[in-house]
Each structure stands twice: as C-alpha cells, then as structure tokens.
Length: 224
Image (tube, rainbow, N blue to C red; front, side, top):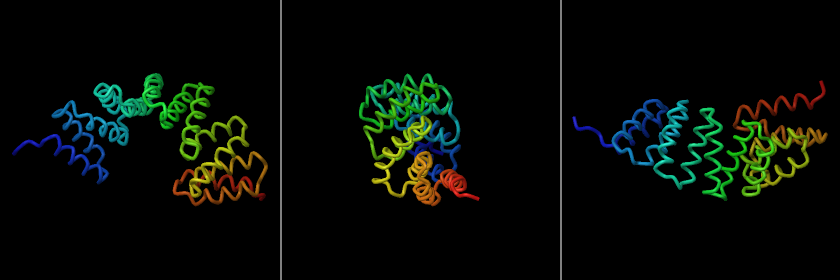
C-alpha cells in the first residue's frame, strides 16, 4: 500500500475534525508534520486542534515551532500566546504578546489577550490600559467591549461601562453578552427598568451562561 502524502494526511485530519474526532485529527496532523516539518500551515492547524482536545502542551510545542518558522508573523506569536495561556504559562504569554503588539500595533485581539494575561498576573492597571487601547481600536466589537465593561463594573465605574456598551449595542443589537453587561450596569446605576429590559434580551442569548446570569439578575431585581 502506497504511503500517504502529508497533503492526504492533512485532508484526512480535516475530515475527522468535521466529525468531531479531534484526537484522530491531531494524530494525523502530527504524522503530516513528520513528513513536512517546514509546512507552517500544519503547525497552525495542530495548535487549534490540540487546544480543542485539551492538549495544551502539544499546542505550545506546535506554536513554538510555528513561531520559529514565521518569526515576524504576528498571528504566529498570537497563537503561541493563546496556547501558553491555556497551558497556564502566563509569563511566556506576556512576553510573546509584547512582541506581537509591536508586530501588529493595530490588532485589538492582541491587546485583548494582553489584558487577559495581565489580569491573570494581577496587573490590573496594565489590564485596564490594554483594554482601553483595544476598545479604541475596535469600539463596537462585543468581545473586547464586554471584557472592558466587566473590568469597569468591578471597579464600580458603571456609567463608563454603560457608555462603552451602548456603542457596541448600536452595532450589534442582538448580542446577549452586551445586553447582560448593560443590565448589570443599569442595575448598579439603580435604573431597574432598563436593567430588566436588557436582562430580558440577554435571556434569549444562544449562550447558556449568559441566559443563566440574566435569569439570576432578573430574580434579584424582581421583588418577591
């Protein structure tokens, strides 16, 4: 039987991944890398598949090799940082993201990741700075605006959180996370009617944790 090429192994990995067979996909990608050790795209896929499988050590190793192959590629640095965070190596993630930010100064995703690492390292001032930079780059992006709002709400800056969330909501009126955080902001601002309104919207979210938090908030806001 003729041995498969790395391209065939890559295709097989994609097929297994589509069926939810993550472990098989990871092993096939590793076999493909053995045949084509300088093919950067294989490492990129392996990082993502390994993270799905919970194989954080494999993800870090694959991302490290990807960064070696593409040292000036900000995406390669970002993937290494994500893998390092998942593996609990926040020092490596922080160092890698600092380099990535210089490679891609307009990337809000990198700033958002820097904030996540800073929060894990208890560097709250740095986290706020990174999120403010991220929101300045992407003022209507729900993912980063929600992170920023959560931080502001923890700091009892509900009015500032509300203003940031309002811009994101205007661009994404059905985002459950934005509605939930707006509900929390209005609750802190003692505007119960608006808090309930946004919590009701959040209860229709496709994300279970958002629905659950919205339901809990509504229960708190509704007198027994």
